[in-house]
Length: 307
Image (tube, rainbow, N blue to C red; front, side, top):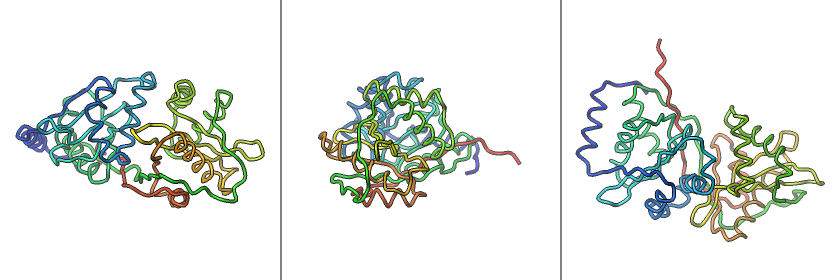
C-alpha cells in the first residue's frame, strides 16, 4: 500500500468529527468486558480472542509488561465495535456494526501514545483498518498470516492412536518451555526466551493456561494448551508435536482429548485458530468435529522502503 498525503488524514478526521461515533477508553479489563461483553457475546466464536485476552488481563495482570489499550466503539451509547492491544502485539478488532467504527478507532489510536505494529481482525475489517492506518501514517501493510477460527460442541475422537492424555504439572515445566519455544520458532519464525518462560510459568501458577500432554508408552509425544475463556467456551492452542513424533496421529489425539476435557468441565464450545496455509491442520481438526466459523487476517505494518 502506498502512502498518501496529509489531506487524507485531514479527511479522515473530518469524517470522524461528522459522525456520532465515539471511542471510549478503559484502564481496567473487567470494566471493558462489562461494557463490550454483551456485544461480543452475540458472535462469541468470532470474538473468542478478544474475550480470551481480556480474561487473561483479569486473571493474570502481570503477564503483560505494558498497560493495554482497551476501547469500546459506540454510536448513541450502543456498542458497535471493540478493540484491545497488549503491546507489542497487534491491535485485535471485533466485527463492527457500523462502517464508521473503523476510522473512529484509527483516529483514536492515532491520538494515543501506542505504537501499532499491525491488526488482527476478520478479513474485511482488517483490510479496511490496514488501508486507513497505512495511508494516514505513511506505512505499508501486508498480510502476515491468514487464519480460520473453528468451533466444536461435540468431539469425534480419532481411532487407532496409541497413548493417553494427562494434565501437565510443574514437573513438566522444562519440557513445556522447550516445546513452546519450538512452536513459536516454527510458527512465527521468532521467539523470546524470557517471554516463553513467563508464558509457561504464568499458566502453571495462575491457571490462566492449562497444558495437556499426550503420552505414548510413558513418553510425552505431543502437547496442547487451553486458554482464553469466553462466556461459554475456551480456546485450544497452541498444539505442538516434535518432528520425530509426527505422522502418528498424536496432534489429533491430544487436541481431541484436550477439547473433550474442556467440554466435560462444562464448556459449551471449544475454539481454535488454524493457519490457512497448513492444510493438514485444517483437515485433522475438521475430522475430530471442529467446524469453520470465520477467517481472520493478521496484518503487519512497516515503513515504506525507499528506492
